[in-house]
Length: 272
Ligand SMILES: NC(=O)c1ccc[n+]([C@@H]2O[C@H](COP(=O)([O-])OP(=O)(O)OC[C@H]3O[C@@H](n4cnc5c(N)ncnc54)[C@H](O)[C@@H]3O)[C@@H](O)[C@H]2O)c1
Image (cartoon, rainbow, N blue to C red; front, side, top):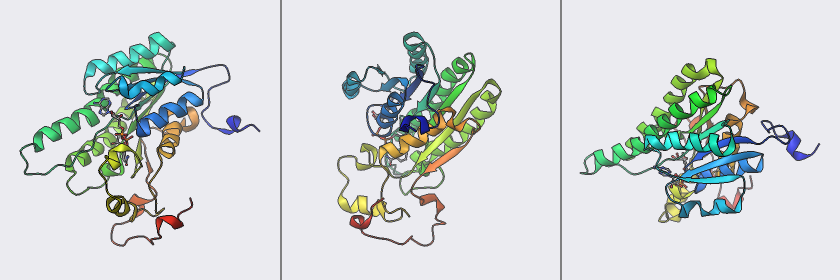
């Protein structure tokens, strides 16, 4: 059997479906955009600047759209772009997110908290509230919000990010109840440490990356394409009876009760 016939969730041949991906310029969002395009979707790729989306010009199936997800008007525009330019909307990946350290006592703490909540939570709310009714009117669809392992536990000095990702995990449950009868499924993908700019931030030292790797049972970070596969599963009919769920893709981090570290090997001995 050719490889493409063995992938669950593929559109029927000759039929391109339509997806929106936010935070599509880099990292997990870019990997998801490329995977959906490769597997037969038109993609509206949303991010903050045209420059960051220049790579989309190499792919006819991907249309760039510039905007800030914390602006509710963008939610309306991205749905309108999908419908007007590609004639439908099947999948929405609400992936745009920011992570910043937050010191409880700093003068900027509340400003940082507000910005993180605006992008990571308001952005998801806006995406759901504009996309779900549009998909319901066309017989259904799937929304995938990108949460994090940081939504199910705390991280030192990252309480605002923790609160925002916990909110995403509960938001998909509530939205799943409100839109289920109309055929719109709403789920979350929860990555663990993944090799993107959000984690490496340009300045991350080898020691820092090694410290992040150490507690991961699989003993390595994820690649963005591994996160994209989970998003594909949740965003396509491959997961047709899954809604309100959060799927961890974390190399086993959240399987740990947190008392003992898993067995460790040097990175050079990791071959999976
Ligand atoms: N990389 C990890 O280790 C990791 C782990 C858990 C969860 N996540 C989540 O995965 C998602 C993607 O992160 P990534 O690792 O690919 O990071 P990334 O920084 O490479 O990509 C995030 C993208 O979102 C865009 N973005 C940020 N604010 C935006 C806004 N207001 N409007 C539109 N676009 C905006 C950025 O420009 C960037 O292109 C985020 O929600 C992040 O919280 C990442």
